[in-house]
Length: 369
Image (cartoon, rainbow, N blue to C red; front, side, top):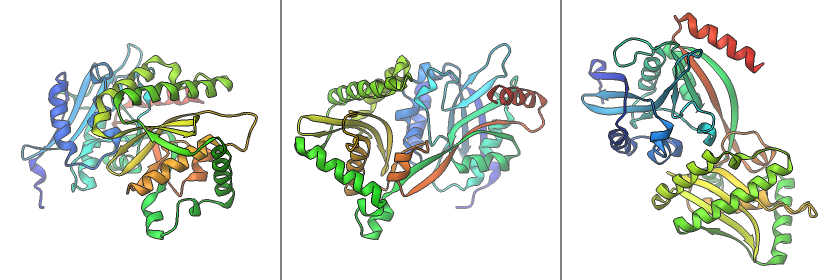
């Protein structure tokens, strides 16, 4: 389709009507390729709290919405104003850790639209009244396409962090005609088989999916208890030590479980619980978001994490899913169980001509060093 560039209009406006944003978002979501983290199920969860100073980026072409981005404007008296894509800018609320973040863009549009929207965002023209004080944009957990688009837009870009996100390419396994375990190293394959065999002494090793919202919430509570126990043994707080983290996910499950995009899985041998997995399942891609495992310090041959994920991966393979995504973090178990990986970036962007962000950027880099 030939598109007249002059028919494209991009706006960045302060927005308080989250209900109208939801309507537009859900409609565009059906015409867009996005991750679960770009769906309204995630973006809209507790949105009034997470986006108290909401700013909406919107691109329209001949009155048709073709791109959306929801941001929160956050800044203090001594800090530059910052727009946070898909986040609040508050550490307690953002502990839910968005990944595969980005703009929601209609399927079929080229990367040029993304570049133009990101350039507009970095330029900071809000409500037609010019740039805001500070003019900084944070884009966390974004893919290489976003990073490339920002650089092409002419913005000043600082990569704060880069993390590898390993995943299992289920299509490649399916096309190979081999089983999942066959693609793993001999050592990993042997550990999983031995662990499964030892667990089977207590009864059949099985994977149970919560079939109701109430059961899913029960599984989440059990997962959180095992997760916290494991992290506290290492004298670390654990994700669920933050009350806002648990509140968000209980709300996410309550609002999204009926859409069949959330998996709460219990892996057990007979009556013995091996572990729990909290995964998202969206458009063929499974995202392994959180877990809790029953570790036995007296039996190191038992591998609850490897056993649980291997069973979930096999189930995803049988269900016709395309990928099992371990999300960001280059952990040994992720490398052992995956056959592919992609980078995710945590980015700050500014207009190239503005000196204030350069000062703030230098200050932040010194503080992180």
